[in-house]
Length: 236
Image 1 (cartoon, rainbow, N blue to C red):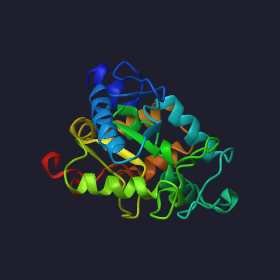
Image 2 (tube, rainbow, N blue to C red; image 1 turned 135 degrees about the vertical axis):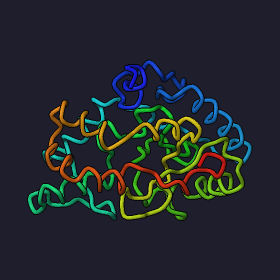
Image 3 (spheres, one colour; image 1 turned 90 degrees about the vertical axis):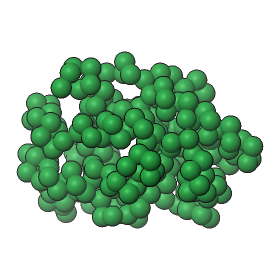
């Protein structure tokens, strides 16, 4: 694998992303164009989309992972409530982390094709988005925006953007706020394999690395690979 592709795939550099001026987040250039087109449509419909998380480097994802693995950050159950880390086996801890946080090296945010989105127009001035299920439920603060977005995606009017975690299949919890630019994300996902992830894990000293490597095939199927049917039909 060429060094430039490896760096992009695993979030080892930010050479492949550019600034989204309003949020200060970094996106893949093509994802930025898709987002800008979606924004124009949303504003006509009365919404004000804003990105709260775009590109995340390997090092940034590792800080999140290690913090949860070592108990420095809260570990949440499927309903978003804190768990007692002391009651979990290493495997249970790994799978609990993966429910809400990507394995460093396997995050779609590394690619710049994926970002987390809110409706800035729905927020009070001092509101801080939490990116939790209650916010994006139909009755939540961002519910109306996401119902509109549901329709855009279903009708093929979302400019190549889709929800990779729109359903609960026993892996990553549904993330209605997470959008992905299908054309580039699909290409990069096909380069990601358990074998190259294992090599990366063993070289970086990640917390709970031995447990991750022991169960990597199951992790890959449940938490990393997005099923073909989740992609827009013309990008499967």
